[in-house]
Amino acid sequence: MIDKLQVRQIPGVNIDDRLRMIPGFSLFRRSSSVAANPTTQGVSLRGIGTSGASRSLVLWDGIPLNDPFGGWVYWTRLNPEDLGRVEVLRGASTSVFGDRALTGAIALFSREPEPKRITASYEFGNKNTHQLGAGFSHIWRRFAVSGQSRAFTTNGYYIVPKANRGPVDREAGVRFTASDLRFDLLGGRQRLFLKADVLVEQRENGTQLVKNSTSMGNLAANYFRDLGKDSISVLGYHTRAEYRAGFSAIAANRQTERLTSLQSVPADATGGAGFWRHSAPSWNTLVGADVQRVEGWSIDSLVPTGKRIGGGVVTQHGHFFQADAKTGPARFFLGARHHFTGQDRQFFSPSAGLTAGRGRWRSRGSVYRSFRAPTLNELYREFRAGNAVTLPNDRLKPESIFGGEAGFDFVGESARIGVTAFHNTVQNVITNVTLSSTPAQITRQRRNAAEAVSRGFEAEVRHRWRDWTSELSYLFSDSRFNTRLRVPQVAKHSGSAQFTWNHKNTWVSFGARTHALQFEDDLNRLPLPGYGTAHIAVRQQIKSGLSAVAAFENLFDREYWVGFTTFPATGPPRLWRAGLRWDGRLF
Image 1 (cartoon, rainbow, N blue to C red):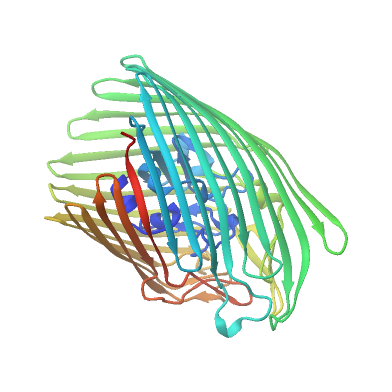
Image 2: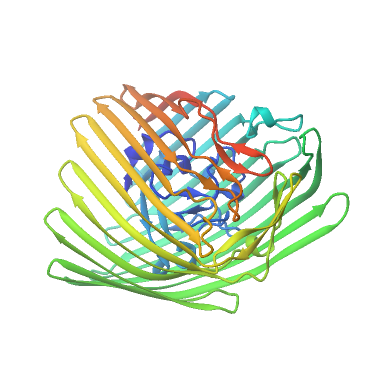
């Protein structure tokens, strides 16, 4: 778990940049959501991820955050400063969460409402960056209301190295506004919340003609009732979104650019779930069911003439149970899900595990079978990234995974150590297969590739000493197809370090993260060299509720590659922001 203070101590405009400190957390590419196309912002854990679709479920207050059409995540919807905590569950979790949790789940929780709380902030930075935020909450006996809004703009940065740029290249920037409003009915044995959030964003994608924009809104509700040894919970949500983009072909010398298509992707999703939990002194049981209906279309207006339309409706539903029982120092876990994918297929996903502890030590292990159905995006949407074209495939099969893990934890008064080894075998893995490659254009198609195996281990160490806190993490993930070629977009080695000094009204946090070499493509012909970056964040309380903040990302201005589309694409240069934040009571 990452608490509120830890989230704040890591620089980053959006929460995805802060979560990169977690070993194994990765988006499709290394790029930040500040500059990347949102369709590349799907998240995976532990080195299983070869496309823009998420292989991990992201929840915000229990409601799915993944885009209904493509599975990616709009990280701009969340303000990191308004999060109360983050919980990360690594390893297949489909027995409870369904096919979107092939490699795990990330749960994001908003701050609990407080009486008469007001927040306000303004930050400015290089690249003409400005961020304005405001929030509030109040409690009246059994009723609470809270909300927040954030507006952000930046010119961004060039994503093509200077030596390769031409007249067509522009800075990749973003402007967005995101707001949410929540009503809570509080009670000793029951609780209900109603929530709405909206997002409007516009992006420049690095050339004169290529831009994209998104507008979306979400309504959600969650009811919980405690019945003593039993409890019930019911949730429902409805999401509507439209993604719009332009695509172009760029001359090999980057002197000219030609518009090839304008794309609109309207989509909506309606879903719900119900849970019943029973608790006893030595055992617990959770039983539930869920359903989701998604409708989405990819509508392309071709230039100079022509139309291309793909999409449809997919309804998935499933039922599941999970149980645990304690005997002596050991606790055993058992789970299963029966799921209908809506594509004339159904899956049974069992899981089992155990933990055993003595004193400050705990050992654990689990085995599982999981699956993921292809998204409408993978089935029907064509897109371009520079001069790399990716074709859809309406004959894709669901991918499945069989795996296991084992590890141990040590929890002391001032130190915590966790080590986990894992082995996963993926059948029918969906990846972008290279059909042809020339200096002018790379053509790929989403296909079910050969079997892939991901094996490795992760380690995390956290230690507190007086005013200092140090956190170290490392992931080794050897992910390969059965042809022995490496799975694209997966680094074999990655790690991070964070050191924080917190004394009275001041804290200073310094961190670094590293990634080894990985490949852009399935043929392992386009290497992306390894790199390391550093960051620093400072917060000084001026008076009660008022603080001055400053943050530097890519502190040493290291240039590194995040992708390759006949030309390399680079990550962010040195970025800095500074400003004031108010977080306190109105009176």
